[in-house]
Length: 170
Picture 1 (spheres, rainbow, N blue to C red):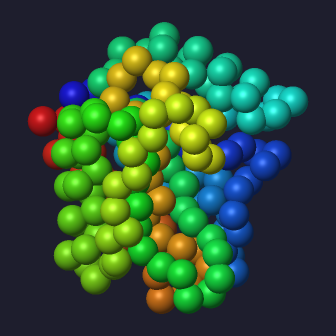
Picture 2: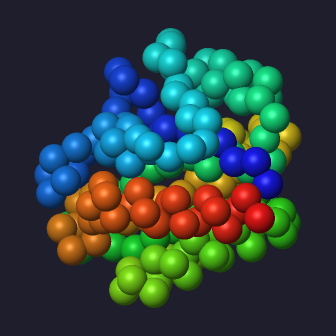
């Protein structure tokens, strides 16, 4: 399956900031995707999330792809931890791919917070792309940037993502 990566947030609204990684979500994932041999889309700053996502999805739909993976990390109170993946409710292919990703992280000692299935773009933050794309669309949040022990360094995350993409491409 042909994979496309989507950086969460954008250059103006960089998302959560991790004091331990000393990076925002946008900057972190921008570093992680360097050297990966897959297309990467970035959301262009606009007058709001909806316009940004519509424009980005318009570009996505012009690409031949099977799986789109939107890249984020969580942030909350300092002891919140674990990985989760959002997918479209009932999409068995996305669920299989999400399970593989979460198992990789579990094998490294990370807590599996599970798969969250959504069916409407307003059901949960981040659901817009999941509910409005034609291919399989996953939104991954592999750790909490607010928990020092939960953070995954850039190089390590790059290797995890590279291995998982190879599995997705099969």
